[in-house]
Length: 487
Image (tube, rainbow, N blue to C red; front, top):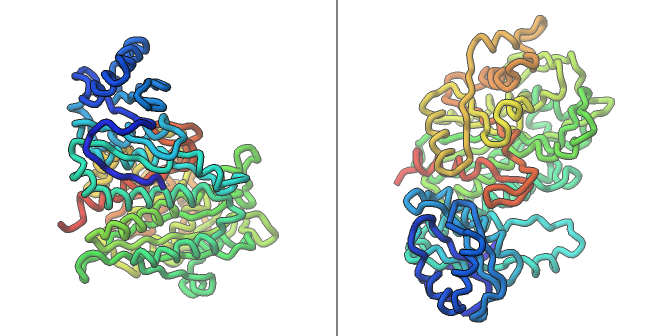
């Protein structure tokens, strides 16, 4: 992870420097100092590039003089509209533009949210190089440390430990999602979660016999075609009052999804290694809460399986009995995530009696048709919970769009031979998937986040690299901090 430090805003001694420049305002003091030191080089570059400080714009000045390798100007738009999510975007763009080099500085000036600028820089500098030929050599060619120069350096430094814990949670999620499925199977995933005990998390792992005893027929039906044994992992953070009901976060963890007997097309199937992004997000969130010592009780439950094709794989037409006792006719083995969630949602509700439940899953391709890659789908049985999550999404930029639910959709799940079937047809596919999940939460306030379109990005965007996004960690951490954490 990029090493961050904070300092008062003074002109550094050479190297690489990024400057955040607001639009329609007087140039920052450091800009003027550097411009004078370089004989007006920055002013000439700004004029030549018609750089105005517009949000998302940038200008790079190579070898400007005064001992600097390069200077990067980052436009942030109007200063009065500069929010934490804008600060994170600017930090990410700056880290990317600074590129390689042992160390660099980033000047925030009088703009607020310097700690969030640092958070964006850490996430923008993220790079997964574990399987490159010479990963150690690769590290030497990437930015190792960044000094954030700010008028409120002391305030930013005080805010950084909590945000640093969130950054580590996002990076953990990204690492898990990026790992190939031949490495990160359910057993290995569970072992990695177990290492988080060092943060103070209580971690409990249920193996297959334990899940059989609990009646996890829906989850185990998905897992039966794979040689990799399934796991359910329970993470608990007890930072609140002893008798406070916990907040429960539940994640789908299909470490590879072939589709089973209802096999997926070959093109793009390699992407199904990240069908466990919901479980990875819950893991990153719980690590963040523990890392910043959140004053709240929280439980994370993740169901880890591999959905494979074999002579023992689940067949279309099979009927399974879930932990709730409800039976499910499996018409499509590629609608497997909801089967995994059915058992662990019920289990979380029955065992922990939580204040609320939020599940995350790369559940349906239909949500991408509906919302593209800009918003995750939000489904809920509780208006207050839905509103709180949407508000946290606006604050962080992990945006949610609430989708409808209703008994009319529920009727599409009716089965002739079981309590329900696992698909309702193509129309409203994301909605019927949510209606299915709703049958396992009872009256507990619950929200389902379909993150199929937001867990992975095929190109860099908003100051962040392509690949695993870590979507949901900042969203849910902010939701907990602003609405449920005790002061």
